[in-house]
Amino acid sequence: MPTLVAFRALYFATLMMLIGSGLLSTYLALRLAADHVDGLWVGALMASNYIGLALGGKLGHRLIGRVGHIRAYVACAGVVTAAVLGHGLIDWLPAWLFLRMLVGVGMMCQYMVIESWLSEQAEASQRGKVFAGYMAASYLGLILGQLVLVVHPGLGLELLMLVALCFALCLVPVAVTRKIHPAPLRPAPLEPRFFFKRVPQSLTTTLVSGLVMGSFYGLAPLYANAQGLANEKVGLFMGTCIFAGLLVQWPLGWLSDRKDRALLIRIAAILLALAALPLALMPRVPVEWLLPLGFLVSMLQFSLYPLAVAFSNDHVEAERRVSLTAMLLITFGVGASIGPLLSGMLMKWVGPNLLYAFISFCGVILALRVHPGAVTGLHRVDEAPLHHVPTPDSMTSSPLVAALDPRVDEQDVQQQMQGGGDSPGTPAVDATEPSPPGGNEKGRDV
Image (tube, rainbow, N blue to C red; front, side, top):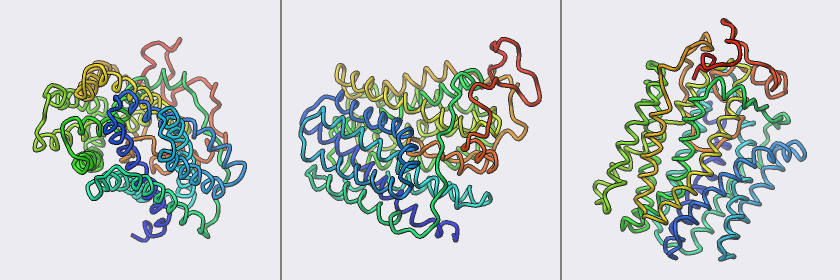
């Protein structure tokens, strides 16, 4: 408890940011549905947000390095607040795409500031608790953002003002802090070719997870609205689904530490494909069935990214794990940018049920692509399986989040963030067994 209290200001900032972000996504989807705008635009808005998050990872490093952490955080929070209010001032959808991208860019920079503070001020023995507190604040914020609609189901401008209020309040704890500023940030190096060869199944899982989660956050409110749910029940549906994602993390961690993670990914993918079928095939789902089915599907879809992270870390050396995290987040962001566009297009052509048909199809593809028997164990690290740490499901984090993970040695992380690790061009060499010549299929672990 003293550890969590010590970081209460940063947790509060995270909570406010995620309340605003979660409410904004659902509000925009319902607002467009009320104006009879097709799902393609809703998907494009969510895709723009994830594109902004991906761009913010690069721009955030430069901005923080130029003006410092607090100034960068304050500036980005101001831009996000203005962009949120801009949705109420401009009633032109192409402009909304740009505004959503601005929100994504600004929020990624804010996450990077908060995470660098948590990383530097948490001792190695505290990182598990600090990381869990950060994850809990993220999920709680997303859930509360949905439940706002239960209390206030109207779609007037007052909800946009509430979102802007949340982003304004998240400024306060960071702006008035007396804690020591974190050290300047350096972008984590990327080694795409290395990771494509070393952990292809983990990257596939991450990509599919991005397709599913981007589609869910952007278009699930539209699906629920098309099922005849009032706005307050849409908020309840979304809150229930996100709560499922939080609830599944701890039993998932217990299983992940004891069972084959590749097998768990394949089982989760098969169950996801089956669980999503009723929502895809039934034209009208009663509320008493919609909530439990949505809860079950969400438990499974929120399991994919944490399993992919743990699975990939089992086969990558400690000095490369910050780069791995950056690669996983970029892969997730690509999927989360494409997913809402594809599912939104399908919903426009066929109907709202195609959202869960798309999710079921993604589960089938993942089940076919992940083969536990293809894992050779050639590059498995000595300490594997590493302790599973529940992680946020979405792009609500920067590559710095790896530094909060107690599986990553503090010295290795610092060396990697300062460019002291292996260079991106260094060929992959296993510490215990030589890599097969030519980088053939036997060199693929995951």
